[in-house]
Length: 117
Length: 113
Image (cartoon, rainbow over all chains, first blue to last red; front, side, top):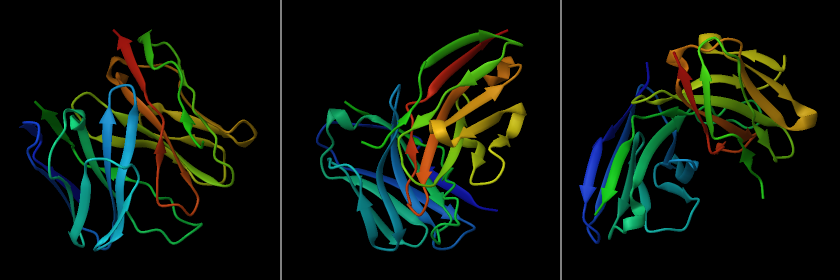
């Protein structure tokens, strides 16, 4: 069966410090991968998604970047954190789609709570 | 702009009461529709989904949702809630052929024993 891991679970970082959050998926190949930020009362905001190694689409211009160095690894990074980067970050995966007949159902990891101080 | 709307962000009700959460979307064309649930301290997980066919879909834990194409709606219902249904519920829409899910802002549901 497929599983998705995220770490760390919680992180407290000072403003201006770098960030690296990691997400890995097991039990599937060539998944679509996604990074979301969840804010209370505002739902889930899609930050990045990837359909393959080295292929990253950015949804929202911001202080963050994403990379996919391996098929089942997705990394969220920042060179210098801002206070506004605080939040709950979720990674998700889906089976790669094939057009009109695919569900794009996404499966979510446990999330990382990031507090920037 | 294309969007997913969920109203009444906070819902408080007693056990055995009926629950209905509204979801409206503004995407044209064919869509896949989902309801996700996040129980306190747990992962976001799929409650139910609609791709095609019978517009009334059954999910886990006694939940169901009805797709009304003419109203661009996918409302979630449960006839009799339990304390364990306390959670945040998110509607999500995937325009067919698109890689992305668009989420509503969620409904925080609290069931009082």
